[in-house]
Length: 431
Image 1 (cartoon, rainbow, N blue to C red):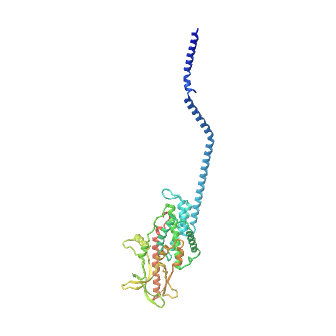
Image 2: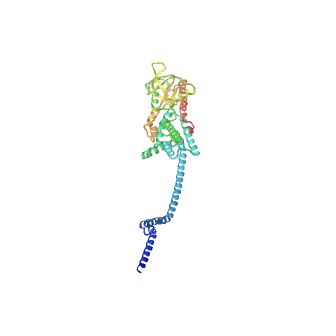
Image 3: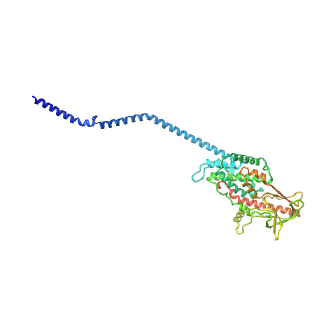
C-alpha cells in the first residue's frame, strides 16, 4: 500500500523533472536569463525613443531647410544688388572720363577704381561693354588731339621728357594710391582749381607766357598719359613699366644741352648787334645750334625713325656767340630754346628781330620733380620767368632771313617730335 503512493510520487517527480527539462530552454531564452533580457530591454529602450525623436525633429529639420533656402535666396538677391551697384559705379567712372579738364589726381583715382572693379580673365583681358569702350576711346582720342596741338606750342621739345616723367608718376599712383590725408585732399583741391582756370581763361591763367604755355602742356600730358594707362589697365590688366616710345633720360638731355661760355660750331650764322645792358651794344653771331643729325649709315624710313628718336632728346637753341678763333665757331654768350624763340621782325623797325627767351626744358623738369602733384602747376606759374631779345641786323633782308631760319628749323623739329610720339598716338586698341 505504501509502495503505490511512492510510485506516484516518483512518477510525479519524473513528470516534474520532465516538465522542468522541457521548460529549461525557454527559460534560457526567456525572462529567466537576466543578461539576455537586459540586452533586449536596453535595445528596445534605445530604439523606441530614437523613432520618437526622429518623428519629433522632422518638422524642425524642414524648418531649417526652408531657412537655408531663404538665406540662399537672400544672398543671391544681395549678390545681384552688389553686381548692379558695381555696374552703376563703372558707368559713372566712364562718364567722368568724358569731362574735358580733369586733374591728374582724379584720373589716377578713376584708373585705380576701374582696376579694382573690372574682372580680368586668366588671359588678363577684360570684357568692356561697348558703350564703355566707346566712351574711353573718345576720351583717349581727345587727349591725343590735345597733345598733338601742344606740339605746335613753345614747349614742344619738353613733351617727350614730360611723358616719361608723368608715366612713372601715374603708374605708381594707379597701382599704389597714396593713403588719404588732409594734405593730399588740399593738394587735389588746389590742382582742380588750377586746372579749371585753364578752361576759363584763354591765356592759361596767371604767370609769364612760358608759364601759361607750360601749364597747358602739363595738363595735356597728364590727361594723355593717364588715359593711355587706363586703356592698358582695362585691356590687359597691367601698365607697362616704361612709356611706349623712345626713352628720354635726364642724362641724355644734359649731354645735349649747350651752356653759356661753351665753344660751339656754327654752320649758319648771321651778324647782328645786341645790347645786354644799356649803352653797351656789341656785334655777335646769330645762329642755331643743337639740331639732330641724321645717321648717314641708314636710309629711307629707318633713317627718319632714327632721326625722330634723336630729336626726342635734342636741346636745339638759338645762340648769340662771339666769333671763335676757328672759322665757323663761336663762344656762346646767351641762348634761347629754339622752339620757344617765336622770332618775329618788328613791323615798325624792319631791321629789328624780337626773340622770346623761354626757360630750358631741364629747368622745367627740375621744378616739377621738386614739386608735389598738387603744387606743380602753382610753382610753374610762379617760377618760370621769360626773357626777351631785340636784335638789330644790318638790313631788313638779314632780319627776315634770321626769322625764316628759326621758323624753318622749328617746323622741322616739330615734325620729328610728332614722329617720336607716334608709337603712343596709335589706336587705343593697340596700346
